[in-house]
Image (cartoon, rainbow, N blue to C red):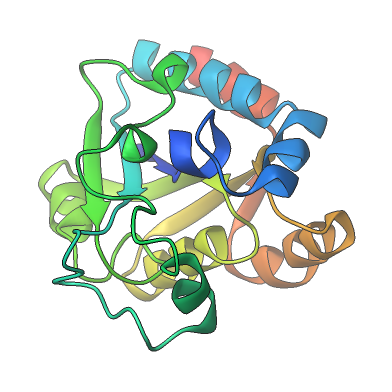
Amino acid sequence: MERVAVLVMEMQRGVVGDLTKFPELVEACARHDVTANVARLLQAARQAGLPVIHCTAAFRPDRAGSHAANCPFIVSLLKDPRHMLEGTPATEVLPELREDTDLESRRHHGFSPFTGTSLDMTLRSLGVASVVALGVSLNLGIPGLALEAVNLGYRVTVVTDAVAGIPEEYARAVLKHTISLLATRATAADLVEAWKR
């Protein structure tokens, strides 16, 4: 059986937690019990001995290492000079999702956890051939993760009830028309059951 790792995309306090600037995304997560499903899945992964890697984002105060003017979304976010600054509580993983044994892959640029990080090398050093993607968002991060992972040779599974995007109709369309072309889709319950065996 090939080695699997769980990649948790941007489940951070400043993205979907108490310090968010994205209330619609928080509402989408609440509507689908995303945080609870992620927590359940991570517990099962750890019990099965699978690596859990939190893929997080942050900016330095001086923006060094970040292209901050090449994307309209980033330009709008960085009108607030304090947004997701390295070392601030906003960049922390939601406490209910973090364990000491977990790994973290931090990026300072872009929307994919692979570009400009050591994530690929970390996965290869662990002997990983398949990744399970969960977190946010179906607008940018999850499609970016899936596409780059496939390009790098990994098999990808996206957990349909442990991801969210906005608006709702768009998120469903991304799962149906984009993710289905790149990845296997499964529910948290499917994977929890599989990992118990």
